[in-house]
Length: 265
Image (cartoon, rainbow, N blue to C red):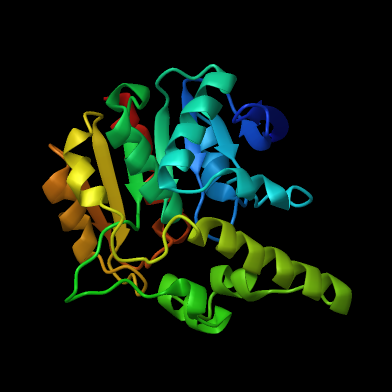
C-alpha cells in the first residue's frame, strides 16, 4: 500500500507556500497535474512503486491558500517558480511527467533550462495550436461536455467519478467554487489558448522525451502528438487506442509500463 505524505515549502521569496504530495522510493520523479488540479490517483500510485514521486499543487489551487496565485503574473514567472521549487526540494534534474496543462509546463521547464530535466514524459500536453484542428476550450465547456471530450467511455466509472459531487448542498457549492478557481489559476497561464510561443522553444529540449496520447482524445487531437515530436529531437510517440485525454488512467497498465521502460533507458 502506498503511503502519501505532504510537505509544504516556501518559494518565490517566501511569498508562496507550495504544497507537495510525495510517495515512493527510488529516483526522483516530478508530476505536474492538469488544469483541474491535483488528484492522487492509481497512476501516481503506480509511479510511486518505482520512484520517489513529487506532485506539487499548482499555485493557488491548494484549498485555503488561494491567494498564492497572485504572486505569479505570467508564464515566465511560473517557469522560474518551478525551478525554485526544484531547488527547495533538492532536485537538480529529476524526471518530469506532465499531463495536459502540466505537460505544457513540463515542456516549458525542459526547454528553458534543459539541464534541469533528466527525462521528459508528456501526456496529452496542451501548448501548441493548429488552425485546422483547434484545441477545445475546456474552460467554457459544461462538465458533461468535458467528460465526453476527455474520456473514451463517457459513461464509464472514470467519467462518473469526474462528474460526481457531494450530496450535501453546501459541500457541492464548495466543490464548484474550488473547481472554478482552480481552472482560473491554471487558465491564467494558457489564455488565450492558441499560442504562447512554445513551438519556438521546443527545439531546446535535450532530455529524452516520451509523448503519450489517446487515439480518441476529443479535447486535444492526437495530431498534436506528431506536432510535438516534430519540434523535439528524437522524441518517441505512443498513441493508445481506447483512450482519450486521460490515457494514463484509461490505459493505466500500458502507460505505467511505457514510462517505466522509458525511464530505465
